[in-house]
Length: 291
Length: 198
Image 1: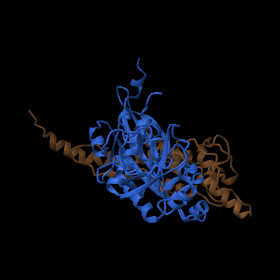
Image 2: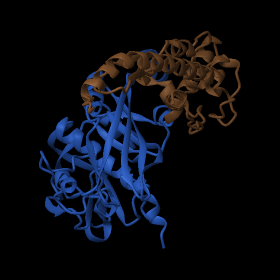
Image 3: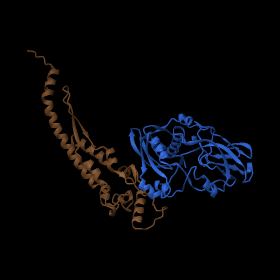
Image 4: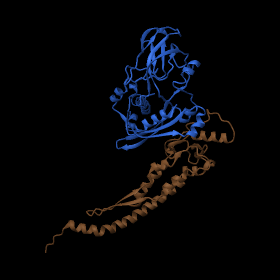
């Protein structure tokens, strides 16, 4: 299926949110040494082995921090895409067994900065994200994951932002078939402290009446294994090259009340907030249907 | 005999003498038009299926169609029995609309008036989601509401009745259909005012 406007909007919005957190909020831990450990994973091709770092979501945009494009395997430096893929989104290295052998005991190390607020795109509803997901707090629970070999499980590491495209509408805008596409994007923020939650809510509330560069889908910087297609990836270069933008018309920040939070999270002390974005982009949508 | 008329002076005299009379007549007509449109808007608000459904409380049925006929908005949003979420909105809408006359210019006989409509933001502020401060259920009717309120309501009921409840897989997600509500009523109000004072 061909790429539609909504695909581009959501992926562009994801990159924009990620950049805001990395560059402006500096929501990351500086580069530290990681030792990757082998874990059986279902979501990797059969000819690859997955080695996990104790942390999820490495910083991948090199605007402020050094983003390494290599790891060390048994003492030898190996570049990304040279028989390995560095999966920045899941904090792991995928090793091609045809290149590096089928051993599950490789010693893989690397230096990476990791995000302290992760970003996920989800097609789940808000209530499903909050009620039906398993969260672990980074970095407090990493040892728990390590002990239980749960790296490959579908567990979200929080603090995190979950982005979803809620709904959209095209409203007539000008003669000649120009419509204004108004889309409502929602973000659920699950944090481990009020400080982090307030920081995220405050920063994105202040982003109202700014522009989000729309990145062509083919220019999306990440490949199928969440690896960087071309190193180094700099969001500022990508966004400056974009000729199309959408406008953030309105942002509404809100928090789950304490009473409700206690009912939902029980003994776990997660802080939950919401950001409701309304973005708009004048377009000529019916041009797509001309033959 | 040739008479020379000072047109500017004549217009000034005419405007000064006729202007107040015209303004008074125009003001009366506008005030009447605004009053009628305002009454119509209040009636439309009271008769709107969303208003009526929420007014029906936890025992109402889904006459607005927003939940596909299942349940009702009052419980879905998460209001507790005895709450009256419509009252604060009604109070704002019922406030008489202010009609202000812009001081007339003696060079022109054009009368200008400003009609202040109920501010949408003020309405959103008095209609918060029961479970999230800062979010408005009125806005949610138009943009979408999650099923969290319903879940929390079920939890409250279960804890009051002493029943246990599993935290997971209890919500039928994605079941809400957005519908035009207050924005449409306020747009209609503006249109009606314009048509009634023509």
